[in-house]
Amino acid sequence: MQMLKNFIKNNINHPVLLLIIVILFCLAGRLHAADGVFNSNNFSSACSGSGDCYEVTSDASFDAVPWLSLGPGDTVRIHYRSEPYRKRIGLRAQGTSDQPVRIIGVKGPNGELPHLLGENATTPSNLKGFYDYRDTNYPGYRGLIIINAMRWGVKPSNIIIQNLKLSGANENNYFFDEDGNRKVYYAGAGGIYVYVVDNLTVRGCEIFDNGNGFYTRSTGSEETTTRNILFEHNYIYGNGNVGGDRRHNIYTESAGIIFQYNRIGRQRAGAIGSSLKDRSAGLIFRYNWIESAARTMDLVEAEDGANILVYEPDYYKTYVYGNIIINEVDDNDNYASAGSMIQYGADNSANAGTGQCTTSLNLDGGDAEPICRTGTLFFYNNTVIIKDYRPTPAGSDWVQTRIFELSIDNATADIRNNIFYLYSPNGSNNIALMKYHGIANLNGTNWINTGWDPGRYNGWQGKVYDHGVLVPALSGSDPDSKIYINGQLIQGTDPGFTAIAKISGNLSTDNYTPAGADLIDRSSNPALEVIGSGHNVTNMYQLHQAYTQRVISGSAMDLGALEQTNSSGTVVDQKPAAPVLRIITE
Image (cartoon, rainbow, N blue to C red):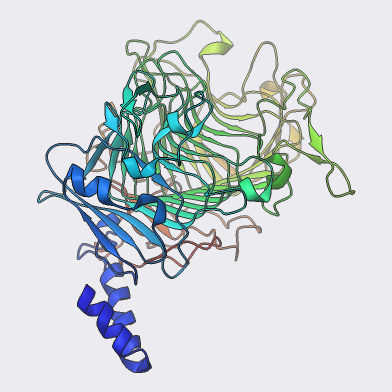
């Protein structure tokens, strides 16, 4: 690598040679696997930047990395070893878009990820002054990898964290500070805990057994607003606190955030948080596998960062598409399941009784902006599977599994080209679309179980309109919550999947690819706001933490997240166009 750096310096005035080098490096980092599936192995772990390269193979070499002075083009390569690194990392580096700072795990001979373990972890002495230990409200207690500003207004930027296993930053574990003093982690400590950053990519990591798995924050000024997060190809599960609902596998508040190609599992046994809780502007959640905790996705209002985020142009638009979404309800295990899977709108700023947003901002002298997400949730081409092992319930509203909870009357969901399937071998028939409040537009084509319920809660039941005509048999008296069937709602008892059983995480045996005629070639056009926006469906999730291009085999796309194999039995591999958000690449 040093020879290459010297070559570049000596040939800086030879643009043709430099162009060839750039092309070769780009190809090295982007070559696709031969089987047509793209995953985190396709990204380079080499020292490709123009800065220094640090090789970590031992505790001593870990502590020798100048963590607080990393700069553009620097790479830290943490090599796999059988013994975890009981170490913490603090980052305040400022890379550039073409020379990011990279913290890269170098896998073992069988693909093993280097493991940073928070239990009894030590803190390198050269991080002294980065952390603050006055009390648990301060950074010192908050995580395994912490990203924070050097000083007010100097944000960390352009950082890549790749191919690391991160665990053990939780309230039951101790760590040691720079002076060797033993301390206990904050209850919400993160595997990765971001105070502020511009342009962060987290890729190919396994994150578990922490308070929050991945956490980003924003606190109301541009100097403290986190921007542009790309979270891809990760496996995150088993985080949270037993008995606690405030810690989640993922908890984010950012201006611009993309989740793609991730496997998001359940929380730790006994935890009652969410698989994903997000308070961001510009959320894009696509091509993921996600299993429910007490909520699957909790997409609610900005909180500490509202002064900035509410005024972002995409705050009131949220895109969720191409995902496999699973809620397993089993009273005989100790894992939380979702009574309401996908909340959209607000929690702290919602009046549950009236459906009104209780908080608004007026910082620019114009009309007041509601903090609540009163815009549109675009929800399309997802496969939603509820596995309910309970017997037929006695009619209580509480036993319904509600797919959507729109917590504000003027929050809207545009729902099209999805599969909503309840698998209930012991007789439970409670699948409901809504909890209360809001407007659900069933556009395009959707599939759902025969006997679906609009949703009932504490006497509430909204109104259902089929192409503009009230359906009295499905409607209650609530005037502020409405379900509009504008497109085709296909109802059936079996969508034609094979081997729907306990979650095994295997698409070959738990085959969620459409097989029934009601699902094949049935997708309608996307919403007008989606067409040309960069959010068209182009890919499919692949086991696990990978994707392949979605090739339409037939007259139209199939319903749900997966496409039947095309006639040739092959899948063309193509990296999608860059998302609207600028992301960091190598």
